[in-house]
Length: 343
Image (cartoon, rainbow, N blue to C red):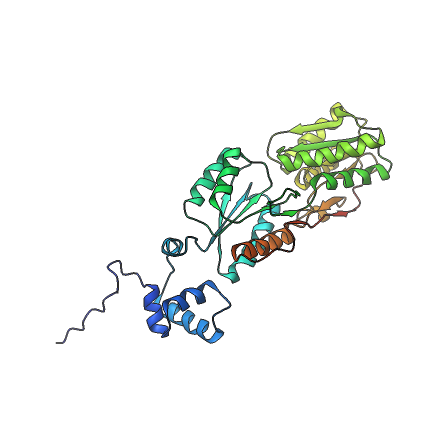
């Protein structure tokens, strides 16, 4: 009886290496590395040969080794406030869809609107030397700012814009959007316009500032018509706040909710209470979330380009990581007022 020899792995760990793939594909290790990173300098036929060899051998790149060799990994860290908010899920999908064909994976960090939690995530991710970084907005601790600046990692801010030098950002003016939806309610003849906000993160407060600016210019601003709650935004909270508002300020003739889920809750509460929308009270939201066009009545809101922001931010980051010149450091993609029957 003959005994077949056991085929040895090239490393004690049994892990297939980049050199193994290079030998199987009959190319150099650097060609394998470039082909698997998606670099355009590698001929398509070589890319196909490398990928076939890697698949046949079961090769899985070692991100730690890649980072050590290049001083950068193939990962991009993306920090967002919440994964339960459709707004940020849409943005993440767009970032991932843009970066993946270029050979980059996304590391998702959830900050829960907590600067301290964001700082801890940054410290953890920077230890792995990411190729790039996408962060939400500009509100963070001074330590976090210094950490980003000292790392030398290319960084793009999303959902807000600034003209500050040396800052790369893609977003829109939250304050101007808040002004626009309030102006719409004024044009519909409303004068007792309330602002209902939850979560109270910086972008919510910027929308509130746009609301105030608009009503002050019209001479009808009343601070007693602001209802601000630090709890997380939800349909249930929107219903509760709508009821609280009408109980304490029954003369309210319009409500600008800082987010669509709150506004959806407000519309459901209005149905339950027999409050006619928009005849008695006009209702408007923000972000044009899924389901807002299916409410009764359909919700007037501000459409925010989160998918476009994610795609544009990822393209900007790719240029920065490749050290390519940018046409613009600050990209304002604007917003769109969506007028439906609720106003």
